[in-house]
Amino acid sequence: MSPSRFRMTIRGKLIVSHFFAILLVSGSIGSFFYLNAHDSLLRQLQDRLQSSAALISRTFDAEKLGTIKGPSDMENPVYLETLRELRMFRRMNKDIAYLYIMRKVGEKVVFVVDSDETDRQAKPGSVYEDVPVTMLSGFTGLSVDDRIYTDEWGSFLSGYAPLLNGMGEYLLGIDMRADEVKRKFHILRVSGIASLFGSIILAFLFSQYLSDRFTTPIRLLISRCKAIADGRIEKRLAVETRDEMNDLVEAFNTMSGHLASAEKKKQEAFDALQKSRDELEIRVEQRTRDLKEINERMSMEMAEKIRAQKALEEAAMTDPLTGLLNRRSMMAHLQHQVARNHRSGEPFTLLIADLDHFKKINDTYGHAAGDHVLIETAKRISAHIRGQDIVARWGGEEFLILLPETDIDGGKIVAEKIRQRIGVMPYLWGGKVIPLTTSIGVAPFIKDKPLDDCIRRADYTLYKAKHLGRNRVEWEEGENPLS
Picture 1 (cartoon, one colour):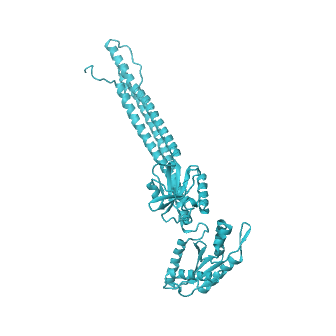
Picture 2 (spheres, rainbow, N blue to C red):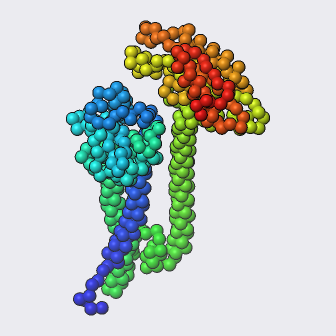
Picture 3 (tube, rainbow, N blue to C red):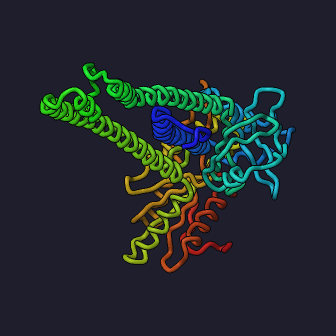
């Protein structure tokens, strides 16, 4: 071979091949775990944001926010109470930077309430520019950013959820500061880079060690061959490699030691196999423990999601203030009762009770007193009906009572008991006595008539009770004369 051509020693080839082989394996494993950890961290942050947004959004009723239109409404009690609750939720979780409620007005998205406590707080009615697609999705369902967004308030990862009774027009937003997210990603990258550099150093050292293990006997054999060529045959090689190279060295020394060397190799191979088996068992045991931990964690997460789903379903069917059924849930019970009436002719009667002059309570004693009165009224009504009867908060200060297997006469008796219970026993709030009465309309269901007819007749008799002076029970046995 021409001396001018490139020549690489066996040692150099072994170093390069082992170095890149080890680096490829360790780098691939390291990259896999880095990317997996990165995606896992992002998914965990997104799940936390989505769950937090879903839970907090159910505490706010969009129907109460309709009066908040612009900066002039910042003294509105509803605005102040909502702002207080938003800031309370934000302080409860140090990872949350901002909480806010948005309204969709046509093609625009505007602020309703912003929890920011600085002079950069967004005023009601302020237009949010450059609305991300994930925010628009949050008006109708749970949504979370798939990347970090930057706006005039900074860089954030955000989650969104529609408000209760929002009808696709209101959402709750949660912003997590990107600084914290970036810090966690930075730690992950530093760990990955450190692991990569460690792999490179170990690969270099280990490749040198392996190449030396291969090439040292070769150099000694070359030296011994030159010595033999020079006539120095009395010198024996004293090298022990414990592999096939050891046989070649022994051939230079003596053939008589071949059997002993072969037996030694056999034992060494057995020890190496035993060691490999032990190491394999340790790795299998470790992987088994890892898989078991992952399965347990996934089972716990699944159970938590199921519990959260059940809680959301229950919240969707009940009134959050009084704990009674809400209007939608009551409609389902009414439809079921109508079906029973059509099958068996079983009668039922509806009562609609409305608290008299309820607005004066809010104006005189405050909304907290009004809420207390509604809760206490729900308890009093529930205490004076049978176990099979159903009561719901029909709206505002109105309550609808379904009396199965009850005709008009039975309905009048129950209505009168409820009226007396509310009117006779005053309500107490802050050491003050709050007098209160109620008006009740009674209407039986008429077979072959629609359910709306029965509800309209109950509404009409309630109106009649109000018109005749309140604090009374009125009933209508036939069709509503106004229908």
